Image (tube, rainbow, N blue to C red):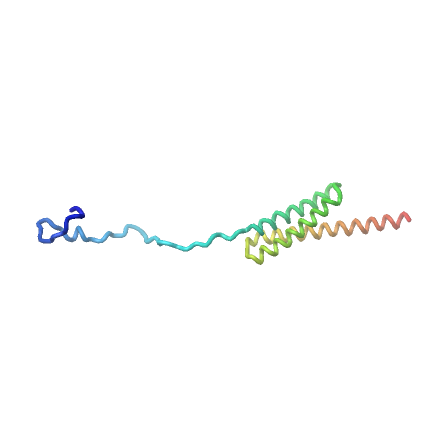
Length: 132
């Protein structure tokens, strides 16, 4: 029957059960709409990781080669920046692994740079007093 025709149960051959039966479900129910939150940005945690690792790399390159004090300063500054960014990333509940790694490598690079600087001052003081 087309949609323009009306159903008349008195007509011969009219099967009311076939025309008005409800469709049967064929599979599991699928939720219609779910609210999803946008994934949190891990920019600060990633920045902490990168600056902490670069600071550590700069201090280690200075320690293993003879490239001058500016590389030691860069390593110390990058280490401090990585440490601070790691703390901020943890406060903002970003990726804990990257934030902690940036925090630790930043702290290690800053402390290692400070230790090398203090050792150099003590060594230079000892040399100066030996030759006077």
